[in-house]
Image 1 (tube, rainbow, N blue to C red):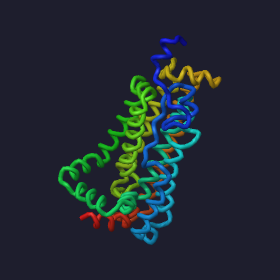
Image 2: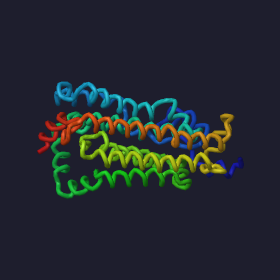
Image 3: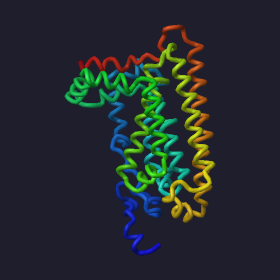
Image 4: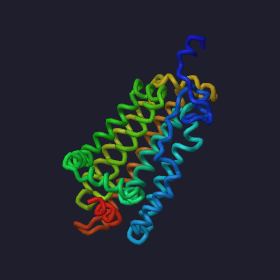
Length: 302
């Protein structure tokens, strides 16, 4: 590599610096900084919120386990050797994205985090958030965003747009863009799963949930197939670091596409089977998992 090319290349954070990892140091690509909300130090605060809400007495073991498992998994996704490998291997990057959207997001939604997170905050902050949540503008916006159709479209657009070579390369070159990519994946996944396993999930919504899961399985499988079967490398930034590890960049890209294609489709299929099981065992009009633990926090904000 010429001196001019090296000078024009963005400097990667050194190992031990914020956003730095061993892989990013080798590849010259910045990794996304870990958001402060993902820090494991926040888990005791959530525990205090759960205690204040007397969540343990109302939520049930399944919701408690889902809540803490989701946040722990999300923390591990960004603070683990996997995150270090994402700067050198496209396949590792795909594992990180799939884990965030198919493991962390549904677990967090299943854990009904709203009430616990509100009670983990101070009273003035809770009241300020409550006033915002009860404004007419926010209510209209939230109803639109949280509807199954909008959630489906937003999640699909985020997936396809960010895997376009130009946007994906921009995320690899800039830590801020990379953080925006991860945030859009996670937030749209939370909206998507809210209508499937969240407090909005009822027996009546089974049809739309099944349709969302099936169509998402199809279009994400198609995207994975396009990446896996591409005749050339889509993301040139991975050529040098992947080759330095002794792997063929095109084979690494094919592996990444297969991860989205096969395990990703399997995750949506498992979700569809879970929804079908819920439909079979419920009485009409009976909500699957009432979010009773959220009500005291929401009442406090009124």
